[in-house]
Image 1: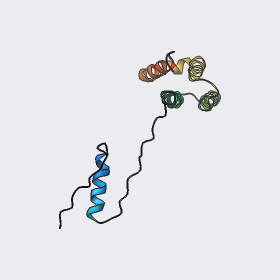
Image 2: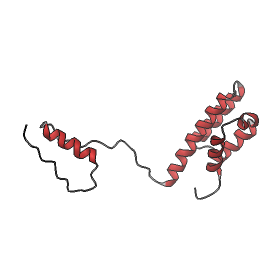
Image 3: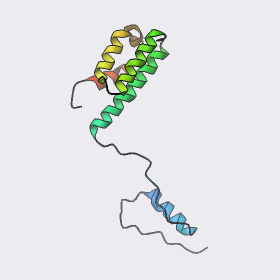
Image 4: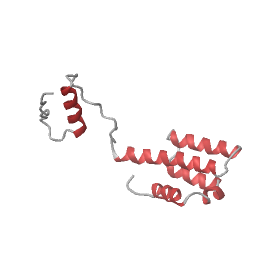
Length: 126
């Protein structure tokens, strides 16, 4: 087996996995392909905040269903969840309505989830 030199990349910030893949393909005389990025970039802080709110809204609805919300109450919860996902109502309004409609169920939720809801509902630099 002959020695294959490591490829020299002009950009020192090239990720190690790209260098190793490139070297391996050269070793086996395969095509030189660069892997596509898997992670999508966050456009701005507002979109990250919105994504966190949507994820928390879904998590809150799921936790409430697991705590016994069913029947007509479940329909109301699904409607509210759909409204917040469609951006028809704000996250703060969603959480206020959920707390008012299901106070006993909300009180039985995990403390960390309630703290997460409270943190995302706080007025601030959103």
